[in-house]
Amino acid sequence: MAHTKVIRRARLVRRRGKKAWKRAMWLALWIGLGAVIAHPPGTASAETSTSAQSDGAQQYAFLMSGLRATGTSPSSYLIHDWTQLNASFLNEAQLTALGAQVVQELGIADVQTQATQLANETYWRAAGVWPGGTRAEVILTSFPGATSGAGDGQPETVMTVTASSSNLTEGQFSSQYDQVERTVASVNGTPQMSAYIAGFKPSEVSEAEADGMAIAALRAVGAGVVEGIRTPLETSLSGYSARVPVYVLSGDHRRVNMQVAVHDDSFRRGTDVYVGSPLVIATY
Image (cartoon, rainbow, N blue to C red; front, side, top):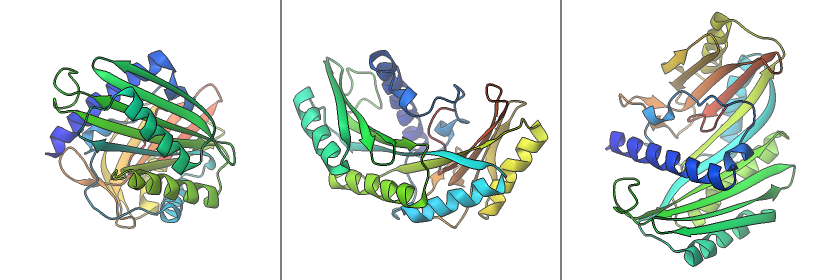
């Protein structure tokens, strides 16, 4: 079951990414620090394996504990939710009405929207701002099922909500995290939250040093390495800690709720570090 959901989500993410890039290059709103994908999040189940609700303040403390252990300074954050809202194919008018409700619930200002109706997909996007210089985005995509070639052949409507900012404070992160989670629940969605805090080290590190930084971050929250990759330019490790209630399952059904990615940033002559929970769902 978990493996099926992994494949299904991976296909939807790839499909949505292609459409959005062609229409609005919406991925550029997430983060512009590179083009390396996090070590395959598709190896973990897209479905949280616990019904416990996460908490913004708890997630902030969890992520900051890991980031501080790497010796880097926090520079930005991203909050993300991916949710299957229903098992129906919605037309443009229906998706627009749903999107307007979500935007109102979130309180996004200066909103720019776009919508497209195709035979095998309905697409709606809104981008705007929250206080504190936060970019907020809502994307709704609906598929008719077997004729679309998406997912497992069933109709469905999925939503992503993303908030990103370089103005990191505990209060702002916590309140926005909780607000996204509440909004998803308000439209009868089951929140599948993820978030990361990014840091920067003004010097390049060796592969061994990057590995040590990632392991230190995991140990700081009581986690050990579950899986990961190590290369001269990138180290990405994931682990599990009992300190937060939400987790996903790795390919071999082990729990994962923290990912640490250490990446060479030759443009700035330094090192980027991302500490995410349960995974770093973004490009870097």
